[in-house]
Picture 1 (cartoon, helix red, strand yellow):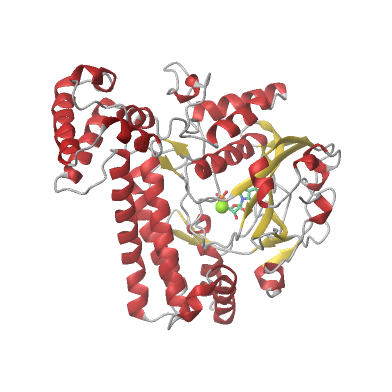
Picture 2 (cartoon, rainbow, N blue to C red):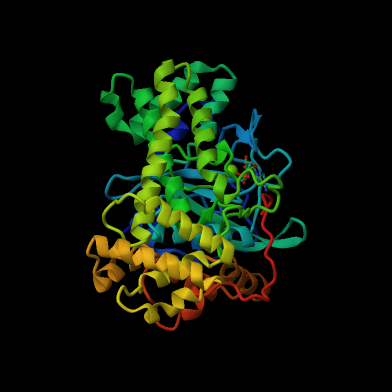
Length: 489
Ligand code: AMP
Ligand code: MG
């Protein structure tokens, strides 16, 4: 187990030419203190949990003390925001402290989000608010718990600094980690600047460090693009299956590793609603829940365009097709699992579509319904009363339940065995907005951070019934205030 001083850095991205980044020191807060530390992320760095209580832990993770071997940089990128190309974005408030190699030789880039101004800050202040760091911290771990590829988070550090958003709010920094934070926009910037030598250098960097097996392909760059397309397709399918929306699917928020990244105004759907828009500033619904699969396709085309000097026309055209195929196949597989089906039969698509339409009409809670469906009993309609109660139109449900029963019989499904299987794929607990909000209110108003740790623990095991935590599985009470989240979060 490592002490903080023992973390071993190999800052490979900082070895790329200077156009790729700006060397910049974090701007610390006065009087920093630890809000929460995530033991499972620390474990990825082989960081000794005894280190969390060190008096200087917060100083290291708010940039006041430099980690030995760290070489802080802000990364350059551009991207398509809401469909329009923005020539330069870059890390405006996240500073990469460096890349740690853990005992298994795995690379983990450490990024401090909210660490102050960089060359890429544009009109921003380089800061993050405690509210948004808590949301990103918890959701990253919730997604990881659900088995969805994502950036991770090590800790939140706050300090005596007030940050101005719509209202003044306490500032904080989030230490997030990923094997790489390279985005689609990291390639787009060199494509649109016609700096093709840098584009190739970046493609080689990503291949060498993160996709070494594609070197064997006839055109490694084509193979890279195809793998990114497929990973992205799988990731989007997983979002759709758990009922989660990202909220700002600009190409600068799309990871080259197919990780969920840059958590902002995201949301888990409560009542099933395909038109669900979680981002208050997304007036057109470009990034609504139901549009995510198409936006993934659009973004893969943008990445293909950015790589067009390295890849021939046919291979470029194949990328969005591979994305779509991967997304649809994965989604079908995941939804089959959510219904507890093992085999694939004709009519399964209709069974699912009819269910979703029914849920839409009744505004059924997405997570709770699927969790409850695990207890469906084939031989006793009266035992399925709890499921029936999810729907306003009981007759329509009864008809669907009859067809579902027939379908289960057709593959000789056993109730008890199926429930075990379904409980492993239908989560009991997701990060509902009101749960995050309660942790945020306690943290900001009372400096009580216990709810953050409680949620972190709960959401790390979303499929496991946890005694005494029943309330955390419930939808927001009807009278709970509407929570508004937007890009500026
Ligand atoms: P996002 O919508 O959070 O992905 O951010 C889009 C761009 O705006 C990125 O280049 C961010 O680094 C930058 N940005 C967002 N918030 C701030 C801020 N408070 N200060 C500086 N830059 C920011
Ligand atoms: Mg971003």
